[in-house]
Image (cartoon, rainbow, N blue to C red; front, side):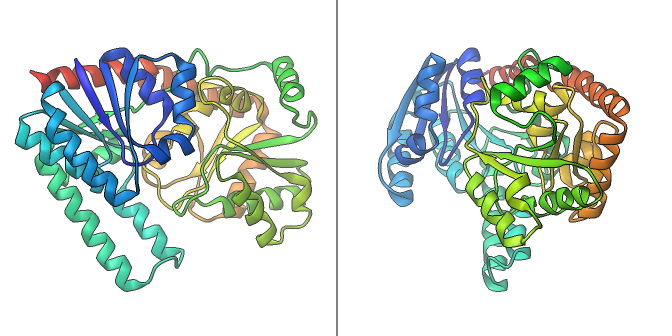
Amino acid sequence: MKALFVVEGFTDIRFVVGLSEICELSLLVPAAQYRESGLDRRIGESEANVSVVALKGGRFRYQMDCFRFLWKQAKRFDVIISQEVLRGSLNACVIGRLRNTPVVTYTCLPPVEYYRCRRSRKQIGAAKAFAGEALIRAFMSLNGKLATRCVALGPYLQKLASRYSSHTRPGLYYGVDTELYRPADSSDQLRLRCQLGLPADKFIIFLSSRISHEKDPETVLRATALARARGLDAVVLNLGGGYRDFLRLADELALPGAAGFVLGRPAAHPMKDLADYYRTADCMALASLAEGLGMSPLESLACGTPVVCTAVGGLAQNLDGYARLTAKGDAAAMAEQFLWIAGNREEARAQALLGRAFVIREWSRHKAFADLKSILVEVCR
């Protein structure tokens, strides 16, 4: 199949590489984000067979140039894949319908729920919140009607997306490479800590998450401080493009001794280095105000590393029984789970390994792209 993947903002190298393995792939991206995210460098390093068209200019110019490109080139492709179901997919859905080229939208987040988090954080006022949500619903409804298929990450998002598209199918995004994301024994863990320059004798809490309006890093930071106050010698580490925001947030919260236990580093390559951070951690934490699924808890479980996360959205629906779930914004409950894991390491490890079996069975990389290929073949027919 000849496939065009249309991306308005950022996307994950793991998804791009996987797509390139199941189809003859072309990528249509905004040039600025393509460079800023490092995706250009990562595609080059991966040696994936991908043809890239990078459109210059700001958001408005990108929309216009994207429309023109699709109008001229859509018939060259067997299928168009478009990221998410909002403004960035409208060009693809309209042109696909006019040029009789099937379009598959792929959504990995709940747009309305994420947007409401801006209001709950008081980043926007009531009028903008009302207008923005109405516009989001309009885009979802229009794209839902025009797209040939909508693929949604996991059962929670599938249920939300099916309200706007009767052609919704479940997907696994890029899944989890369970050969790369694998457990480490205690000797491996010490070696990796030395290799990565992490403290050998601390309880390491790994926060593998971007810092954005729908996440709740404040709760993880407060929970770590509470656990430390009760005797757990813990540090919390964030990897990501927003790690400086994470460090700044710790200062703003005025947590006692934060400079000594709050760590931040740039993002690690997800197909090379990231797995070692999961493998060397004592637990992984993710607190959210809203969440579609969150791939990072699945990656942590694949490494046999215990997970503590907020029982919201897809996290609650997918991870019950495999992760330690806490109420939204409840730092004390999250601290209790950190302490429980530290005091019951074998039991916590056993629960995480049950999670690994679940990931191998339901969320493997192989299954993710085999399922997606079936959907693409179906719409091409």
